[in-house]
Image: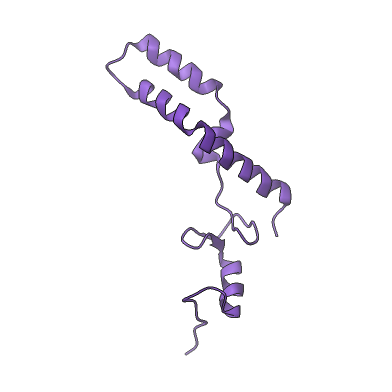
Length: 101
């Protein structure tokens, strides 16, 4: 089980990123627009830098929803390999069968 503080910090980052997404997208569109004057683009860059850093999507870490483990994460199932194996062996994940040959 992961530290509760790490899981909570990641949840807070997800919420911040969702709230800031529209502002960040608008500023990035201004920055990338080559037809605008360089002064306006620079002001947009400064405004983007003033926004909270946790508002960026790249700061979010994929974590297992069962255990909070940050590594060996399956995106489709939103859980780690260890939790997947345990729940698969118990028959709680549909379509997962322990292999034997």
